[in-house]
Length: 360
Image 1 (cartoon, rainbow, N blue to C red):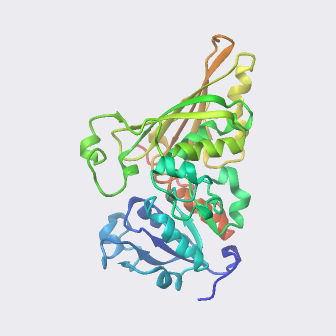
Image 2 (image 1 turned 45 degrees about the vertical axis):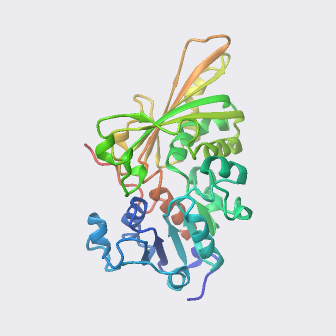
């Protein structure tokens, strides 16, 4: 099949392959793509469950396609696709993604391998050298709230991480306003689905369903991604102290971020910033009469954000809390990738993404 210079130029459904189709990210991608009117899913690629129908692996997708899982080489996959969504783990994804790029395919990568621009930061937080450091900085960071125009013409997209999405959305209004500086402290609780489909000691849900624990304090790999994004948005002399927490739920992230501003900054002006920043964003709910809850967004593309301002001051400083709740697999993962894909295709950017969360 001949390639096109821009997938948005297609006058028919875009032929899309999903690599990493058997993971939770792959399942979430396919939940959206298999019913997407501007997409035709052509190949399902993975290293496990080979030969099985998709519905045998992801029961909720049974009957939506006759495609089977295959371990196909990129050249074979590329022959049937204009765009490839890659849902592989970081450290694995980089070279696979590069092969599809070299074959002339548009790519949306859900891993962390192309989000950073600094190879040293990648080495520090991912604990390996990046195999293709010369390609860092060549992907559009796939957060529509920040890079909507760039995504419309993008051929290579690095979709944001789940914690990075929640924390960035919480803090973005204050970075844009020049109020984010110094140490910013964050704790964010996440569900077990963020650890992937293969259980391991400490991440398997039965082992975490009755407990809570912190992990990777100050060393989580999303830290440099968040810092990089917020610095570009206007944060000054800024550093993130991030503590992720394993929570006894399947889906969702709840992030709470603490920072200080000068006591002379009007509290009402601070409270108004999220509403001003996200006024045009259909998928961001700015709350004023309650705080964000995972239950209100689980299974959906919606994010809830809110701000709390301490009326007291201490040593000329005032404390601000920024809150955000998202579904880690949808807004924090595959759904956000589909949002980027919609922009790349030139269709309604919210197509298939506005269904509300389940309740209860």
